[in-house]
Image (cartoon, rainbow over all chains, first blue to last red; front, side):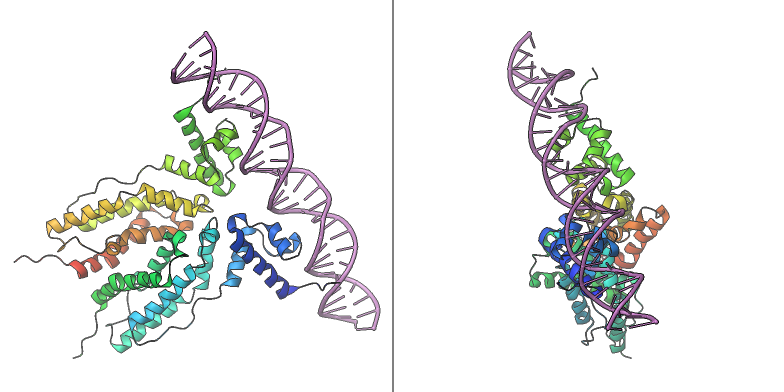
Length: 198
Length: 198
DNA sequence: TCCCGTAAGAGACGGTGCGTCTCTAATTGG
DNA sequence: CCAATTAGAGACGCACCGTCTCTTACGGGA
């Protein structure tokens, strides 16, 4: 008698169940049977959609965490613009707990890449804005330099998987500030210091 | 009648068997039973030593890959010294195949940290040498700056797990050179440019 | 409105590997 | 040379896998 779920509704239920299982037991102990039971459906319904545990987990992550950022912030300061992007990324890192990552890191890596596919464009825009303001001489920084803060915050997230989830927001901001002020801005100024008027 | 192995000998046999299994099937399909069979011993012998699959794999990695570097290179050039360290690290990255890392990344991360525990000292020495030569003004770079190339090469290894193992030695050197020439050296020169005589 | 194809929900099934336990016999330290 | 240790081998129950079968609700097309 209870109505049977289908399509999107069913899929959402399953993915939420999977996410809940991951939160409770970690990816390691995520089982198809467990998810099916929690979602009150059959295993076949899951196997019909995802070929294995890992793909299911990836789908659950994708379903839970939407795209990171689409439009470039424009605060009028290069540092602040980057700061906003990095702080967002650091916030996301909080979701990547050891329990989630343990045994799933390569897949998660793929998802984060997908979720943040807009970032290169955003960064490019931020740099163009800064150049237009005259804050830097030009926006043609080497790819590796432009993406440096992003790479470093991602690296930081990987390196500190264990601790990152417990780090306070303030500490995360300290790391972000350190990356910007100690590494990135000095480098950018060395490579493309401000255009000096006349 | 066949003599029974014990202690170090037995342990080495097991770890080599485990490493072989990882090479053949990847960590994902590494099984305690498989290792025991290959090493011609009982499961209990393994469980007596390592609590689980992951720990066994970690021990096998540690057993196979020794410490990375102990003494600092001293070529007379800051760039060359760093280059040598990075090239070594890139070479190691070749062992971290997707099959190995898949499902074991956090543990591997721990092992690499242990294996390269001498690196901070090495880097410090390299910088002191450069300062002594007058190549840079002083060796008191912020930790994050001094370690920047290492972090970047590690990050590169993580990001490109899938491809890294197939990358030619020449390509790896290009990445290393890019990190040094585009990012690190400009930054160091901006922060601690050469002492000017007189 | 009815009817039929599709897929949900439920669970049986054999298979694999886990982690524990038991047993015998080789080895070694005292 | 005896006693404690532990290697080597495999049985055991268990959890979960991935496949399959079966019934039944749903919903789109005529």
